[in-house]
Length: 194
Image 1 (spheres, rainbow, N blue to C red):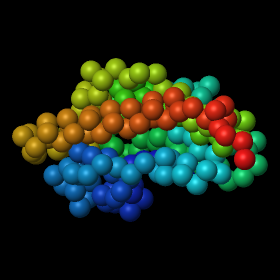
Image 2 (spheres, one colour):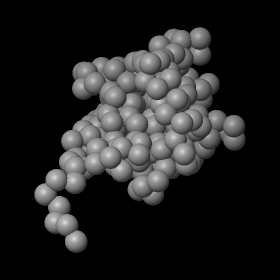
Image 3 (cartoon, helix red, strand yellow):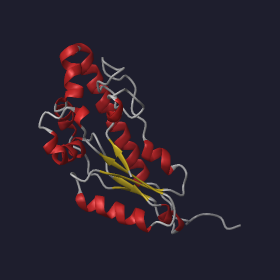
Image 4 (cartoon, rainbow, N blue to C red):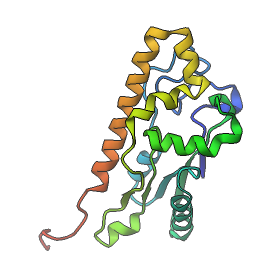
């Protein structure tokens, strides 16, 4: 299980490939300019690894289903859990981290999905998108609920809006790619027999 804090919180909050676009971090004081890597999607390319992306505060049933499936899977499993941390600077406070997870999913900042290779063996799509269509109108306000974004807006107001718009576009692109993956046809129908 990977608890994705999106910053290297245990080493001072440095910018890394896990830092999202537009967030402030050590070594990215004006906001990170490139998008975050998609560790989960990268892991699905192996084809034999169970992968899930969860946020317990957003959907406990999906979280438990992913954990049960990962445990039952007869091979390597990877669960990536959205984990707000102190370096996010939640304006609502760390006591509201579960609500922050729910807000992240509702706004389209974080997406819930599962990838089970066993389904491919049955001719079914192994990728299941569990997130509903986000309310993109909440995305900007979600960012401003965290000091790591709010600090960029205060220090660099002109650049901040550009970065926040780019972060939203990246979130939309990521969601669209998940929607496409969830609609792939994995049936064996129409394949020529050897």
